[in-house]
Length: 254
Image (cartoon, rainbow, N blue to C red; front, side, top):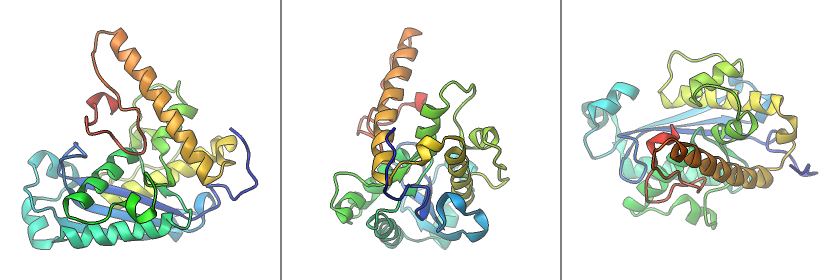
């Protein structure tokens, strides 16, 4: 990586982002809850300073029991307590776009799922996408601790799940995992630990780290796909980041 004289991504305000949904397909499933966590001080700040905003939406479709068992929101809860999905989407997208328009990073673990789902939902409800609001071909800048960890600590054994990564980086694991706001706080803590462990990565600007992740994800996807095929598993791993192609997401990416 090349060092920069611009402010690094670690010095800028971070906006953590996570969703809970009706399922695992970002092209067809729907938003149920969302959380944004603003950490003004970036890598130098702690969760004590976090400003948390959450939304509960009525997705206008039934929430499968399998999804409700993960995040705890049933169809009845969403219908009686949730806000209209179009209102939630507009507020969420406006908040994300206003942060990104300043050149500040949005942080999301496995963010390609959340951003793909959000863009699909915005189109579905006739609202401008994030990319359209920003005047870009894709939402940016984004920082994804999953993409960074896969590249920077690629030989560490074990699955790349948020709670397992948190333990690997010495970050306490919340008992409230799989509520969007707690997952975001944990994601920001993991990212701060990554920045501390890999100072060359932390020295990049937002533009540089976003581009670096695109290349890192594409390389990981190709290598993992080849690994699976060498063991007789025919599969496709999406090369695109931070959004997923309409082919959908392979279960092997978990």
